[in-house]
Every structure is written in structure tokens, then in C-alpha cells.
Length: 295
Image (cartoon, rainbow, N blue to C red; front, top):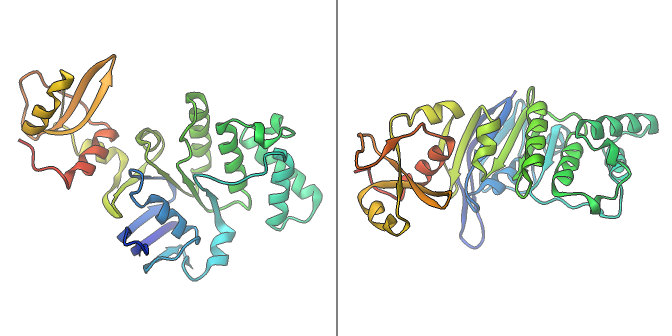
């Protein structure tokens, strides 16, 4: 079971190149698609979900041609977009029952069993009679996953699923995604690096419509071993460090400024080597095209 994307391109009428000859092989399991806002993630996910057409390229899921066999795709697809509509005055149970009916489950007893199964799976059974308008962001996302799981999909796409969630809801949502992603293809499209680091065996980074990295998550981090250096600096000194070193990221910790620098040679002058994180991988590849070689 795999999703194959070949030479996919899309340019909008305003001249923005959203996808530039994108090719990916996505196997079963959780796959992370990382990229900043505007990188092309949503365009790619909407194209895979048959919601818009590319200018060129091909997408297949096993024997299904995604671009020409849209009805077949919809039968095996679960999609949770970044923003999805719902009826705030409707209850979780009633709306999911309605979605189940739209999926073709006519028998009332079968629908009742399916709705109960799904709401329990996403830990919303006790809130089944609660109006959706009163749900927290995390509860809405879990309800969205419940509707995405209707029809036992083999391909699930979730777009920025943990944006705005509190830490407890984020952990709960991670556990849910990990459970459902064991035997099917689940694409997690996000700009939140920790989501991919925590969940995904395989990943890719997209920037300005181009795939800049395709790799196993652990390999991506190990490939940078021995090249990431950290140092605390006075905040006002950042420009001079950026002139001298290849600074890939800065962060504040306890009110102090820390920089991460890429260098294949050992750095002295207060720098210490750190174990590369996926965040380092992410910023290294995002800055690779805009910064020169390390000093």
C-alpha cells in the first residue's frame, strides 16, 4: 500500500508557483510533510484529496489513478482539513450519524453501532449529546478525525491538526493518530516540527513548492551528527554571529538567546556540540538555499 506522486506542478493565476515538479513515495504508516506557511502543503493535500486539479503530473494510490478516478478515491479517503465546517447547534452524535448516512449506511442499527464505535475511539462518547459549538479546539479535532474514519479509509490526510491545541489535547491527538496510522497511509501536513518528530517514521520537507528533503525521520537527524553547535550569545550580537557563521536557528530559553550553527568543522569560542533534532534538520534545509556554506 503506497501513495505515489510524480512530477506534480501547480501555478495559480496570480503567478504563484505552489507546486514545482513534486515527486514523493509515501508508504503505509504515518508520513510527515513539513513546511512553513505558504510552502505548498495545503495545495498538495487538496490535490491528493481530489479537491483541485494540478497543471501536470500524476498521483496513484495502489491501482487507483487519483486524478481520473475521483469516486474511487473518495471511497477510501478520510480527510481532515485545517478548517472544517460543522453545525454548532448540532450534537456530536446526531451530526456523525448524519455523516454515516451520507456514507451509505442506511440501516439505523448499523449506524448506531458505527457512531458509538467512532465516538468511543476518539474519546467523545460521554460528550455525544453536547453541542459542537461548545467543544474545545481539541474536541473538534477529535470529532473531525471521527468523521474522517467513516468508511474505514485506507488513506487519511490531516492538515495542521494540532495547531491551537493545548498540551494535553495535543498528546491525546498524537496517541489517536499513532493508533490509526499503523496499517494505512496517514499524511500529517504541518509546520509544527514536534508533531513529525513524535509520530512519523518517514518525512519530507517542502518549501516554495519544492521538496527539499525526503528521508526517514531518524536518518535525517543522524545525517547531521557532528555538525550542529550551540552557544548562548548576547541578543544584540546576533547580526555579527550571522555574518561569521551559518546560523540556522535562534531560540530563547529562560530569557537567554541561544543560536544553533551548522559547521562541519569543530567550533571553539564557547560553542558546544549538540545532538541534532528534527528542528535542526528543518531549519538547515530551509536555510540551505538562502545561506552560503559554513565558515
